[in-house]
Amino acid sequence: MPSRARNKLSARQVTTLTEPNVYSDGGGLYLRVRASGRSWFYIGTLDGKRIELGLGSALDVTLAKARERAGQIRTMLIDGVDPRAERAKTKIKTQPAVTFGTFAMDLLDDIEGGFKNPKHRQQWRNTLQCYAKPLFDVPINEVTTEQILAILQPIWLSKAETASRLRGRIERVLDAAKAKGLRSGENPAQGRGHLDLLLPKRSKAAVKHHPALPFTQIAKFMASLKQRPAVAARALEFTILTAARSGEVRGMTWAEINLDKKLWTVPAVRMKAEAQHEVPLSDAAILVLVAMKRDGLKPTDFVFPAPRGGSLSDMALSQLLKRMGHADITVHGFRSTFRDWAGETTQFGREEVEMALAHTVASSVERAYRRGRALEKRRELMAAWAAFCGR
Image (cartoon, rainbow, N blue to C red; front, side, top):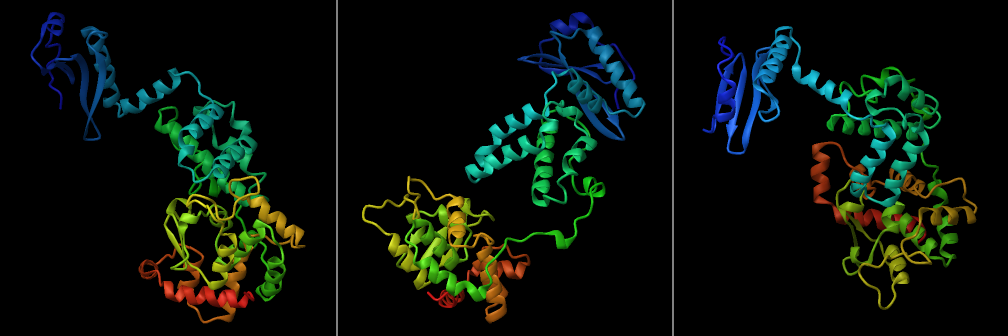
């Protein structure tokens, strides 16, 4: 507790004390003398806990002004008011107004280097610029729950995935603003325990899955696909044979392939779960790679390059499906085709199937099993899948 005696220091002492130390003026007010200069600070208690607040440099704040500020803090503490929170509010009010749009775009400039790919960076910007546009001119410390609801409600059921991502991105922007002292209080974009109480519940039946080809039709599809000479056709063939995500295949380089070990090692930076993934390659998958092999290739070259250089686009595979008369299915849907085949027609365990799909398994037992990788069991699984595909 601060001493009851007050006004111990004189104005002359404040300017002449040179010994590095902390000097009490009483009533919780202290002068700290260092070789680098003199400064004021206050020590008090709130709810039984010690708090300390700086009051400025003694060069800028006179003894009389320091005592005045200390008196204001004492009054707040007696009334049970946290002076730190009040100071934060004052800081926000006195700062130039920063709009949500300006802060969000500046934040993206700072953090987008951590995004996995340019497409993800652009999706962040596009989502905010398209759907959160009504917030762009609003001072970021004035964004409210009602304003966020007005943005989310029209698309909450009709564009469920987009709405969920939008909510999360707005929440992150506002959290970052609070961390920089531009906001205070609860985040109005918080989902659990806040917006989920105000937005309509989504029925499980409304969840949309990627349209997939029935596994009974995969052999016929693969036979047709094999007749097409384009690089996109070979990329799609390899994607299906490995049950991989198309982005993982399109970004694959020769450095990731070990033909002798019949193994494809996808680095963590390119995986959705941000963990390295090993894919055992069937003989059919190896044949696709051999067909793409050329003299003079460098380890950093893409296995399935675009005609004009660089990696293939996701659109290239989608357009290929349309040209084959399958506009009703998606590339990602072939992972569901593989899972349905494995679950309905084979005796392979769920663990092998989930690992083949590079899914994160939930239980500690399954995680331990994953660490073992069970490559040989997965080799058998992928060989059986290739055989079923008629390859």
